[in-house]
Image (cartoon, rainbow over all chains, first blue to last red; front, side, top):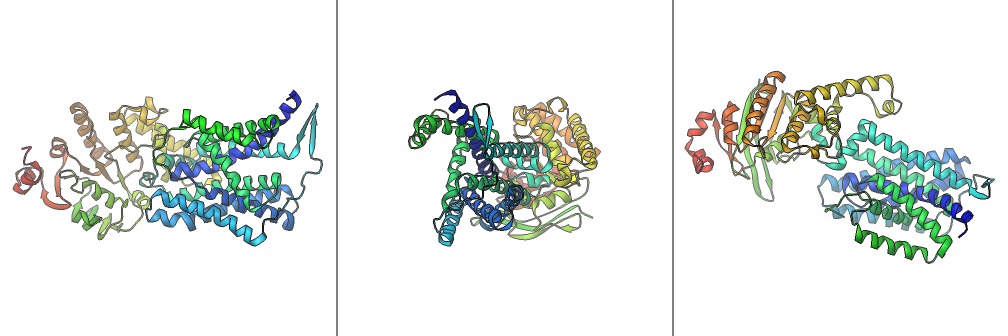
Length: 294
Length: 254
């Protein structure tokens, strides 16, 4: 691999990794609070990918307006999923397995819904950025990728500040260590959980839009969430920062390996590597060991 | 008028009665105790009062308001705070944040205002931090303010939990086995501390406890539970002499 291609792939990898990081954090924040693996996040990503496509082709032509609208609608979808699917079983005090099964069911339901409605066709987003490439020296960088990288970084930074500084953010962190006690501190746990799902939905909204822009929309677009889940686990469940960093790393490793080994072999190498990594360090890069898992 | 009125509450888990027809009346600025062998339903009684678990039957009134089916956070906001048998601090927040979080109900701004850090957000935040720091110094915990609670010795964690409960400005404080895991000297300090906060904050306190010396020392009234049933109620001297209590609970010890 010559140096040019290396840097090119590095930049591509970082921006793709930014999207993985968004998914890892969206997946991880629900795990932190409710301690179940939320596969429905992929379903929300898919809904948002279609929403973004619909808005961008039928309603408005502006990238920024449709991205913002998709993001906010993603938050709303996240809250709705919580209220319709997870709140009823939470109030009844069901075990975590119920949450896990419900979350997978939602993901499959969404996939089948879009398959039945629009078939397995590909829906490409409009080309927002006409002059697509930016020349820096001998490097050719995609403007779309740069924009994705910039927005992912901005969103993750904003989320970090929110969790560190605001009272709701601190309440989310408190609920992550103990879901039961905040209500005895006068905090409405249901509301905090709604906010958490809103945040996850917002992240899913951006992810869905970016994935739609990069790969065109199909019913299976939600399965990209697997990369985010891998990043969350490799980064360490319970650590959002770890998940974010692992997401970027995964994107970079993937891009570099594709350039070196090709797109067919790369996933095999990556998945095998992850299995070995988790054998050596089961808590991931920055996480602690959880005994409860579903 | 009584501060807390518990009117024959019951709760069973899978057919086993954890608390059965339990009633009690707690006055203002009174310290009372709930004692009983393991599994007698003492902690369950606290969980029912604070709304952590729903009642099967019975009613609870606090300060003239019925709180029977209110959610926990509303009950807390009305003025009932508690500590826990197995300490439940937030281990991913530092000591100061643990206290400030419990004072969150004093903040009246919205998340939107917070994002733009409007002046009233800043001033309320500062005031809350000041209150939290004053509790830290009250409990001699100032120098740990930036540490994680789980890095503190056990005795200090118990004090921190007490400080966090007081941040809620309760009128009724429920202490669930506050002496558990403390050595005799720490227990002695705890007794003085409980007296002190009761006097200074004009609190009403209910203590669930195994430690007889502590309960007999500071409670003016004691309720004895056995297998979910209240078998006696009275002043410490009366409880000490009650034959039923001696048989059920103190039998081997006295």
